[in-house]
Image (cartoon, rainbow, N blue to C red; front, side, top):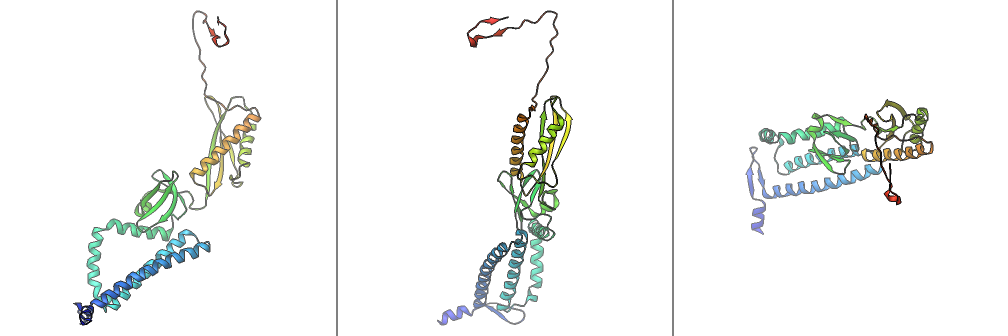
Amino acid sequence: MESFAEIWNYPLFSLNTGGEVTVSQVVLAVLLVVGGLLLGFLMQRALGRYLGVKGVSPHIIETLKRLLFYFVLVLLFITALGMMRIPVTALAFISGAVAIGVGFGAQSIINNLISGWILMSERPVRIGDFVEIDNNRGVVENIGNRSTRIKRIDGVHLLVPNSQMLERVVINWTLVDRKFRTSVRVGVAYGSPVRRVEELLLQAAAEHDFVLKEPAAVAVFEDYGDNALIFDLFFWCEGFGERELRVIRSDIRFALEELFRENGITVAFPQRDVHLFSGEPVRVTVDRGRTGGGRES
């Protein structure tokens, strides 16, 4: 027991203030930090569940959880120093030197960390937003300390450093609201009643459950094409990503196919007129071999 007591109270180093830091103080400080971090993790989970039940925005929940983590971390650090009787002022010089060294060696990490805090405070991008960066479209799932996780429309997760989220051009489709505008283009045969085509386009949009009534859908007679009269149907949906919008556009096309067939309107298809110039009549031969006959000239 005496040997254990000697080891437990063995001084590791002395301070300029005249005190000593023993093994027992270091061990207790480490246990305090480990236990405090575990408690902080449990508090984060409890806070997230409580705010989630209350219907708080996921972005606000992540911000509060992060603030709680850093508050617990600073509190544990100061308490551990107090247990070892180390004044905070004694670490000022060492902390400055370490900060300079770490600053040169981990510039990108610090840059991403600061960028993450800017993203969380200014909120140009929020959790749940539908964004586009470098031709990648997807939903923001998490804004971490170093990177932002985006789930692309094909299901692949994309990790973007936070600094790039601030430095590059990011298109946030849901920054102001969650309304998306999309369109369907269709070509009908020449001679079709254009006003009737316009009515059918608007009818297809009005009958779809996920197409918003306001702003109202708009049918535009876009152009005279080579083989068709070109129409564009513009309409708005709310709260959908690119994959869901594709399904909605597909539904609109199915509905238009039925409406056009019922009203005798033909969907145009590519065609080409061929003119033959010859000094003699062109001989045409028809093969009726399938019906058992011969050839007719």
